[in-house]
Structures are given as structure tokens and as C-alpha cells.
Length: 342
Image (cartoon, rainbow, N blue to C red; front, side, top):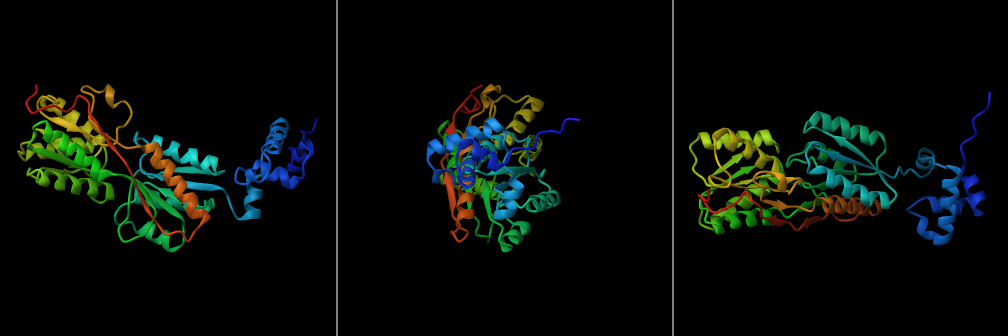
């Protein structure tokens, strides 16, 4: 029987490229590649590709106590908000020589704990967490244990953790002012869960914005989750209590889609009877009927900045925690119009 050829080693690559083994190692590691000349690095990488060489990441991690991996904790992978965030995270981590393990918690606390334990068992060097609630004992515990973490699109109360978020307050204020400029005087808000910083900040911004305009601030209903079905349930509850309004600022785009479902059930016209504004600018909103006016958040950049922040924490564990707010913008489409435009 013919024996399979042994896998090429780092020494084989070095000999093929005509360099020392240590030089070949530096060339094949993105974090050390800049220590050698570009021509030498290209020669080593061509040799590795020709030989079919694959670095032994397990051996490297045992030698250096570094795994060059990061965990990304997502609450709901079916939410179109997250793919561009994931791509942003990956683009920065890959250029830094890191790989990312992605776990989905389904917004379940026990599943989240189990998934984070599995990431830690894989010796990830840090976590990017998009599941944080205002009160989050697990994150407090991990912080006390010295786990490097960056929060994305969320913050935690009474805990100093690096975070990257969109400028939610400015986005909601722009939405309210747009509706008021169209002539709406009774504007409702379907908030996200108030157990999250995102839900609370957007709800507070809504109340401040309508108060500053002299408009009523009691037209608010909380959604249990950031989902289409919960958006529909919250709007039904608002209508059932006899609330009168001509416009809705939804906590996010999925909640706004729930409004569309209720309009269809109740025979209401959008924007003729009720105008709607979402938040996030998910893909394909321009294909809806009517296309959804929304607040655009730079999700790819959210992910990229969170990854950069985590790499900074890994390189400098004593670095003070900071929060980065990224600018947002109102995208006006067909779901908003003056009251009674239909």
C-alpha cells in the first residue's frame, strides 16, 4: 500500500523559500509579517502555497498561550441587523491574524451562559457581545474574572466595559422631528425591550423629543422582544386601548414590519392613515410597499470598530474602557407623509 506523503512542515517551507525557519514563521503570521521585507514575505507565502503547508494553530497556541481567536455572541442570527455587523468584525480580525467563533443565544440566558462557556473552553482571547441587558450578572461575573470584552449596540449599567453603539438618541430625535415637520401632532412609540440599553435610550429620546415639541408623551408601548410579531402585538395593544395617533416611531425595523402586519389586518393605509418610521435600515426595506422610512445605522462599521477596540484591549489590558458613538442618518422613503395624505 502506498503511504501518504507526510504533511509539509515549517522547515520545508523555509528551505523552499531559502530562509531561516524563524523568518518563515514571521512571514506566515499576519501579526509579525511586517518585521520582514515584503519580498521575503511574498517568497515564503508562495512556497507555503506551492507545498500546501497549513500552520499548526494548536501547536502555536500551546507555545505562545495565544489562540488568535475571538468569540462573537449574537442574540438572533435570523435578524438581518447582524450579518453586516459580523462582516465588519471579521474584516478587522482577519487582517489582524485572528479568527472569530460566532455563537447564537436565541435571547436565552441559559443558552448564552453555555455558549460563552464553550467559547472560553476554546481559549478565545476576548469576546464581542451583542446580547447585553442593562442588568447582566453573567457579564459582571466575566468582567470580575478578567475576561476581555467589548459590547456592541448595547451597554450595561454599573459596569465599565468598552462599547460601540449607534447614536440612538440623535436618530430617534430626527425621526420625531421629521414627523412633526409633516404635521403630525400625535406620534406613538413602540419601544424595544426596556431591559436593554438600546430600548431604554430610544424610548427616553422619544419622550424628550415629543416633550420639546409640546406633543403628548404617553403614546408608548413596550415590545417584549425586537421582533416583527412583538411589534404587531404592541401596536394591537395600543389600538385596543383606544389611543389616537397618526404616526409611529418603531424601536427597530422588525417592530415596524409588525406595524405593516396590523395595518393589513385592520384595513389601515400607510402612510394615508398612519405613517411609520423604523430604525436600523435593514436590507430590502426599499422593496416594501410602501418603502420604509428608517434611521440608518452603519452596522459594518459598528462591527469593525468593536473588533478594533477588542484588539486594543488584548494588546493593552490596562487600557481604560471607552464608549464610541457612531453617527446615524434618517432615510426618508414612502411610509411617511402628512396626516390624512391618503
